[in-house]
Amino acid sequence: MTGRRVPLDDALAYPAAKGRYVRRLFSTIADRYDLITVLLSFGLDAGWKRLVVRLADPRPDQPALDLACGTGDIAFGLASRGARVIGLDITHRMLQLARRRAQTESRPARQTPNPLFVQGDMASLPFPAVAFDLVTTGYGLRNVPGLERALNEIARVLRPGGTFVSLDFNRPASAVVRGIYLSYLRLVGGALGWVLHRDPDTYRYIPASIERYPGAPAVTQMILRAGFTSATWRPVLGGLMAIHVARK
Image (tube, rainbow, N blue to C red):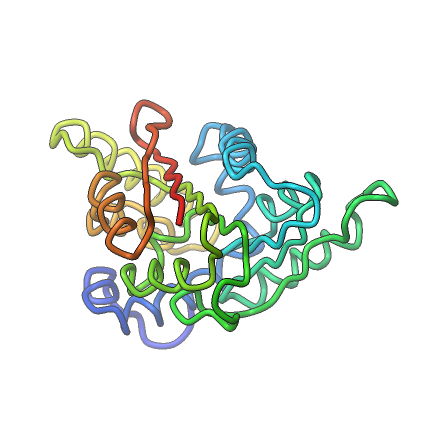
């Protein structure tokens, strides 16, 4: 992180402050991002993202949008099933890594092209209305400063009958489980932040953001209020993670 250090609680107190913090944070961790997701998920992250792709059920030539795409795991998974994919992320370095990966991905000649990666804000999408059959995101909703606005944007760009699938950390309803979960993430995140960046707060952002996250049932209701006709969620890792599936 560069510039004046902002306390984590202050950085997440308001949407504008959170937006600035998240931009700086993900620029800092981009080159370590894939490693961290493996470590914090006990190596299960790749399987969860494959499940997101299966639940999205992409068809050949369907237009699909992967938000907060990072280095492209879900975007490449959708493309491997034949979808025409745009991956969007707010972090320039993440997109550099995703494009580099696209150059080395081996793909059968008859498959659709690799995803197109563009920079943008998922709360203000640079796409026309009803442009996509599928929208996906991995760890996107918890990080966006304005969650309701982002959900409204997702609904706007989806076609009627389109599908939205989201993978993210959950905020467990049980205070006991939540306390243990967040304590683990603080301990491990602090250690990883110090080892990798000499800043223990780097990955303490994750439990701090979970504390402020509405949790999967509340997010389900927010999705419905955004204009979706149905929305469900399934617990992952005993409810510590969640996958939402919604239809417009």
